[in-house]
Length: 96
Image (cartoon, rainbow, N blue to C red; front, side):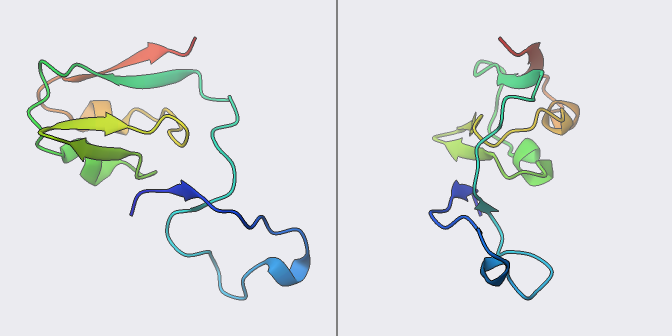
């Protein structure tokens, strides 16, 4: 499930779920600007195998045609996608 922003932000104790976590993909804020590197996909090298998608802990990678796209609003810049890409299609660059 691709993460997306929710309208309801918990403000009181009764707004917080009784279980251990929210449903999958529950996010109330975008990346707060703390990421210092980010993944960049070279679309010429990308073959659309989706190995990066399978290992992304944040679920920010999705398929667009035969290639992948990243949602930078929720990417934390961990670099796992780069490590998993056996075609070298993902590089990490300094955040601007």
